[in-house]
Image 1 (cartoon, one colour):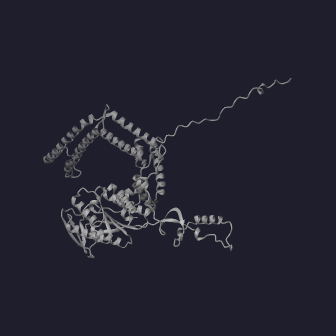
Image 2: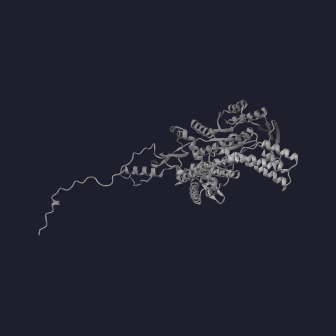
Image 3: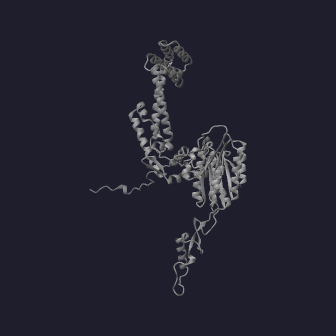
Length: 581
């Protein structure tokens, strides 16, 4: 039997439309897109701590974690986990406050004190003294009376019980004033004290959790308290977060130049460079883009390579600046443009006309000495920290932008000393050892038996610091030499020959000796720029003296707040370099 005809072959094929999976994308809105996470700044926190403490020492992992602020978003699950712990602790606190009230405990406390007072069997004069202290509610006075009684005696034990009753009353009143109990269950005095202790522990742990949530400082969370107030599982969860944060800190420390040793984390040269770079980045963040570059380069045969642009080689150019790639390219172009070899067949691959050298920038040298006031008054408002931060920023600028410039630091107190950059970071203001309103002292520095520790070092010897700076700059072959003096007031010490004079209040004799040293510096072509920091006891005499010193040396006087000192000095240094060269 023949098969029926296939009618499907006679039907038109269905029209095929677009197929596959269709994806719909939301519009990208950069205003609401989350910014990329920046790596935490580890070295800045470590250096800020070191500048304040004035010492370089290894940091423990806990101290390192305390010095840095980590974005909580960089730790998976940190925010929700801590939020859950905070909510459960707040619920526990709320349950306590909603269950109890302290009215009964507050009524019982005075009765307990009266009962303990009535049970005392002591001489009348001792009882009268106790009654006076009770009337004043003076716990310290009762303790003094108890200390006079024989140890282990019945009278001593009775007074101790009275002391405890008075202390319990104070504690109950403290708890009632801090927490708003609104429950129906009356708490006895011991129970009220227990509740207060538990609430204090909850509040302390809540503060730790909130701080950990804000800056991912999970290392500050007390795991024992967490285990006791919540559960073992919660403590283990937080311990895992702590291990995760420690791994992040360890990786960051390695990236930013902190080396882990047996005693803790040590600063390396890489950490110093990283910190100085970040200081400069923060300083120049407010500069307009058009002003952020260097000054216009001056082409010179000697100098640092400024860019990849080249010029033809000239006789006398150093071979170190030769660009071999560009020179070979010029030679190949020349040979390709001459298809026929010259007569004689002697055509060298490279000729003098083919050589190309990099363009260089000639930077005339400048010599600078920075005098850092480390007298006793610089401790006020942390002025010494701003001075040291400025010193590190200026050192970083010169190393990066003007490597040929000369820079030295001089610390100034009763004496003056040359300091390296590492020593600058460890400087601290001298403690005030003489507090008399009038001081008139003289010391013979030529006396071999006189040691530096024998001197009160909190005075301000600008004259000695200028003399040392003048000697340092006098040995420098630079047309531009300057002293940057950072201080907060008048000098209070000076030298005459081998004699050191320490005079307070500031004496005209000291001022004249300092101005005389400034004129010697000006005679040698050295100017003194004075950065006058504010001080609570600054007077018109301080301002007048600073102006005279700067004017007499051809320098300038600036009134600068401590917070802006690093910005001002670095900006001024670059501006003067651009103007001069």
